[in-house]
Image (cartoon, rainbow, N blue to C red; front, side, top):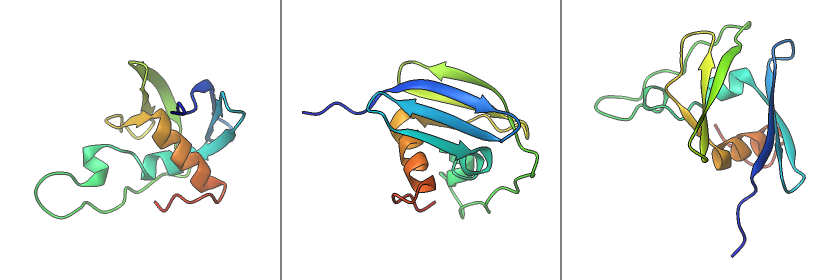
Amino acid sequence: MTRPAWPERLAFSRSARHLSIHFDDGQAFDIPYATLRRNSPSAEVRGHGAGPKPPAPVIAPDLTIDKAEPVGRYAVRLYFSDGHSSGLFTWPYLRQLGEGETGAGFQG
């Protein structure tokens, strides 16, 4: 069984407003902060629970990520400048978002 690619490096660009993620299989992706915020895996954004799914968040053009914290060995919690921080971005999900940014299939 093949093990999933593991992230080797995360870099946050305040000026370019993107997260660069490098995996141990040689793949690297730049994911805009707006993409991360729009596709947050949080219950708030995904609309889990009763009622209709909430509208897509309004994303300010100057959105940044203020900090990031590891969650165990499987994810990272991102703290956006608009106060959102409840989504846990797993390594496979970040890979999926990155591949979507390069045209490899994420429909978000």
